[in-house]
Image (cartoon, rainbow, N blue to C red; front, side, top):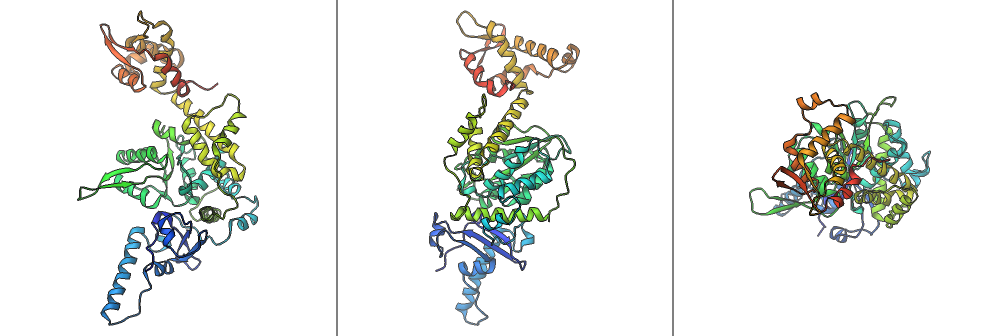
Amino acid sequence: MAPPPHPLRYLDFYRCDDGRLGVAWAHTGDSYMEAVTPGEIGSINLLPIDEYLDDHFGKPPTYSTDPKVKSYSRRIDHDRDAFFDGLGFVRPEQAPWILPSEPSKPLKEWEASTETGSLLHELTRYFNTFVRFPSGVFAETCAVWTLASAIPERVTYAPPLAYVGPPRSGKSRAVRALRLVCRRGMNLGAPSPASLYALADSLAPTICVDEWTALAMDIRHALETIIRLAFEKGNKISRRKERSQGIAFYDPFCFLGLASREPLPDDVVDRSIEAIMSEAHDVPNLALDNAQAAEMRTAVLRYRLEVLAGQCHRPLVSNTESLVRAELATREGKALSDRGLNKAQTLAQVAASFDAVSEVVDSILQSEIAGKERFAETHEAWIYAAVKRLYPTAVTLDGVPSISLRDLHDEIWRDLQDGMGYTARMLENHDPVLPERLGPQVRQMGIRTDRATSGMRIHDPELKTKLEALAWKYERPL
């Protein structure tokens, strides 16, 4: 009996030279499907779709009046139809992502034919050609991220790439550049949250969001859920099955590229590698059929297949924590947050064999510094700065710091007038502090409040420790 077809998230599809749909997979031997599939472990398999389905479902028989043959033929047709129903397309031009060409040339041979001799450097040159980044290391980071997103089976974390900036700053161009070379780079349409979860589980695509603020609120919340849970492999999204009492568990682990004209939610920024975009001039047009992008797309697929098959001459590296910490040790006074270390370690798995760990660490450091600067403009940062100044004079007789929310409000007003150009009349006409929300915002930062005879107040014996813990987020870098 022939083995069933592979789950779709593990198969790759390409356009054959004759225009037919092709199927590619690496025989890893590390799952049941690979164990029952004929073939040598470590092999790379490239087949036209018809031959692949013949191997798994059987070849449709020629016409016959025999009832058994007819029944067998109907079963094969049903199984093939079910496969294409799950995939969602039959021909290459119907695919929701732009398919690569047949990845038959070994990566080492392909690299030898290029000007730079390196897939990573060719990808970096591609990104530098079509996108203007805030600094040079971001192009190389996009290249490393593209390769990491091609092998979700081999990485532990999936940090989104986030491009933030005003209109006409190059955000959409950056997302398009990603989509044209990433594995299964798909523009996000307007699905329901349930279909979005099913999409991530079934295909593990690289989801590209051209404008975050244009998404419907329910889709935005669904994406935030995916970003929170899919940052680290192993989490599931549970939903009740339709018309039954059962529960479906979706695997949301996939990579995302985002563009937004407004600051992204804190949870998204915390898990992303963020680039603050500012200009988009003097770059050539990037068409969907761009030849350079097409060549990169095919080389990325070949890289994926060789890594999964254990054949790649640029293998993944496992001791990435020590590599990242060694790089940080050379940068005096610089440190990454815990999630920053997770991001750097994931990309370093790929970057190490290309000698690009230093650039990865630099870009994530820059991303975190930009994030701290953005946090410094929020209401929470105003609260932090005011509480920090009021704290030395706020110790009560019982030794517990106590600060009234009225004093806190007035201190924030003084800050806004002294440092941000507000006038007293402006603040009286439109108070940006919103006193009724001050208590909930303080508590959201983890600081305890209670009600005294004079009104609400901060009353927290661990206030000093909590201020020290919040310093990384709200203190401006020197």
